[in-house]
Image 1 (cartoon, rainbow, N blue to C red):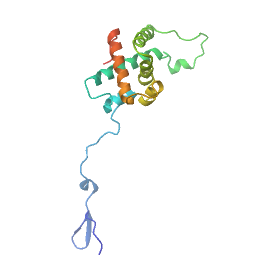
Image 2 (image 1 turned 60 degrees about the vertical axis):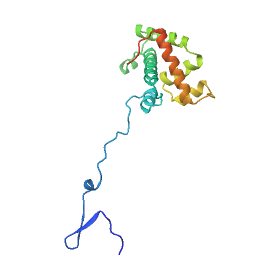
Image 3 (image 1 turned 45 degrees about the vertical axis):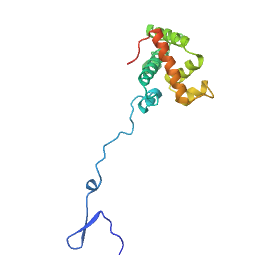
Image 4 (image 1 turned 90 degrees about the vertical axis):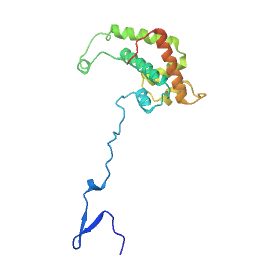
Length: 170
């Protein structure tokens, strides 16, 4: 005779009984597959703990989020899908006061950053590229890891925002 399946037990005369599947499996807590609802690369890196293990991690996240918010305000069109169907004879829509202020704030911040840091921050926080693409586009051979170079750029952004006294995103 072969080995018997341990899930099956004999009960009574020649009848085999199998316990229901919910009684045989141990209870496992449901873990959501997606741990982050934030669609930005910065938010995903923050949830994974890639922005550092020190107290600067939150400052880097808030600085990057502030830059992203300013970038999105500056680059939004102000048009919705209903307006896109109409034909206009004008040259386009003018910037709103909020967009103008966001543009001035971004220009002030970019003045304080090096060209490499400004490019990395714009690609990573503004245009939502992944960190490797953003860093290697401006620093082809970083002296340390891509993650460390990104953290240096975010620290420079944090210092520039502090110097310009731009209100942080919370």
